[in-house]
Length: 318
Ligand code: TXA
Ligand code: MG
Image (cartoon, rainbow, N blue to C red; front, side):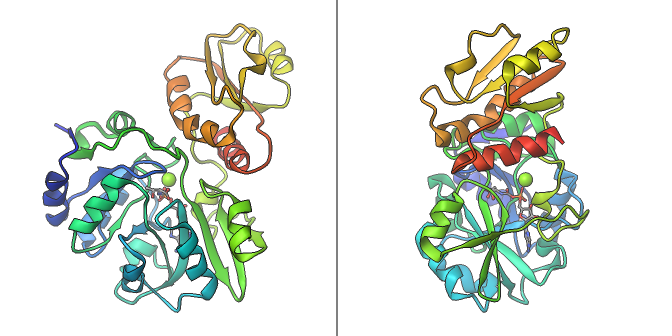
């Protein structure tokens, strides 16, 4: 039996017992465990069926806790933490020796952020330790933005899901690392590159299609629905090409709504990219339940959250 509850003390009880619980954040729900418990950490990997080379993100409650986790923090990292925490920006920093190899997948670095969700923050403040929390989905599937999505994935394998409503941002945190004086973007996410560049200047975008890249969130196939998905510059053309199929459409706005399809998802009637990002995963989860042959997704404008949406759709389509 899985308990879906807003009772934080129940979650603490399980976490203190080295168990794993799902928690809400402003980006997506996470599968949380005590960073000092190997038992909890191993359970996170097992539940997610996550390969052991893919490290976890550590969630802390305040900037003053950063030195528990990381050392030799560059100036630009501090500037970014000041500007965006609590919030959807993850920093890759040199790890403290006390941070387990299970958290970092053996890397000398650790990923860390402060989530901006009242329930997550209250939980972190009441715990005596930070939590590691990857997105609460099986490896390569779509991240969950509601407690129900988490439940649909794990059912009774998970004892408790902490209820926190729909995630306001709806896509994962942006991940950046630091090399010499450079800031490197490892994953597009809910903090736009434009906003980051306002704080620290030019960001270099990491590109690498290796099997075990520096940031496995950059794996080519990721964030995938079960239904085949293609991305299209011209929705009408693509629909003609696949006219014999049962099609679902994933659209930015109302421009193409006249087209007749089985299932239709419009991410933002007002053409607002942030609203579209917040609705993306929930729409993909719904489309995946429509028994379609094909999802045709519109290509989004390549700016701000549009870049993150295009990145996720590209990986989902791969
Ligand atoms: O918004 C988010 O970041 C959510 C919520 C729950 O906080 N978490 C999340 O975690 O998306 P996850 O595990 O699904 O993605 C973490 C990404 C992975 O792609 C992993 O490869 C990368 O962070 N990562 C973790 N530690 C790293 C490190 N030391 N170096 C490079 N990449 C790292
Ligand atoms: Mg993930």
